[in-house]
Length: 417
Image 1 (cartoon, rainbow, N blue to C red):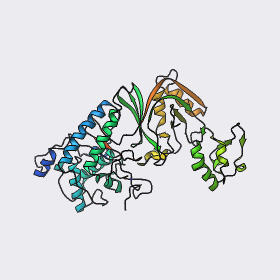
Image 2: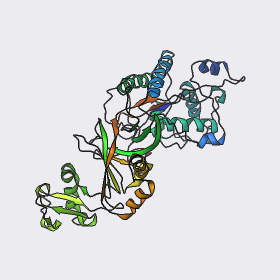
Image 3: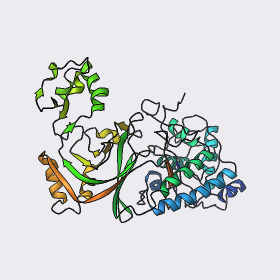
Image 4: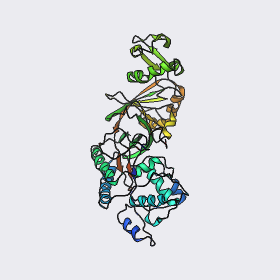
């Protein structure tokens, strides 16, 4: 049985212009009247292509598109919303009455052209529509219906409308000038955007705070880059993670090149500490630099904040291929962090791509203060739309929305995870 924490859904639909073919049925024409504008194309390239939108999640364009999408969703709700589909695993080549229900559901939400028909065969038309749904829900676009896809599709239209109405208020809070260059961290989508002159210069998958250790919401400015940093273990991690690990594996600190120091700077050996008491909380734990093993990887990006969080590289880069990236203790891990560092230092004299690459390779501890700090916004946006008529939904992973009926569609250890 799919539980709330067993599945992590990231919802989204792309309502767009439907080309009602001459052979479309009367029912198809009725649906076409209220579908959003997008010309469907079911060739092979469309089936595999992932559109790259350069509109920032915090922007006047996103706000306007989301306001327009609210009107469209209100119309869908007024017409009765959409139906549910069964919890059936379907893929290309499947034949089942469940495929008929799936087609109906995809047409109702604007994901499938009514002209694609109502057959019980899971053909390339259906597969392309499912990929589109998965992309807009933040799920891996396999084109096959799995548990996470079922959960996402079965969120009622009126609940999705509530999400849009709530999040448009959040977007309006950022409707003023955010700066010519700024960085957005959005927790529900676990992504980072670098924005310049109103356009996304680079977008990165991210690893953000766990459900029980959420990343905070705040505005700040990026002021410093640390190359090849030490990692000083936060007190909360010492108590909750490090001490239990040492109880299980006494060589853990040595294996991970973490040294123990007194507050006077004197180094002590791990075996000198009683790990079955609170003695470990009295010391400072510092991991040596080294991008392949240090928890911060090759670089740390600092911004002043009361939560003492920051962005950084990670040696555990496999997480970026997962849909569920709520894995940290509050800080934000960034995929392809070198590209973000190049962008952040682009206006700093003497820090071109070549020097940055050399500094990464050197292993030398180097700190760079930004002469021109970059605005940084850590946000919580679970629903938004873009000017091309695409609407994105993400799960309320930290339960900040307060809307009933939005399940967590996938989590580690689920049948699809």
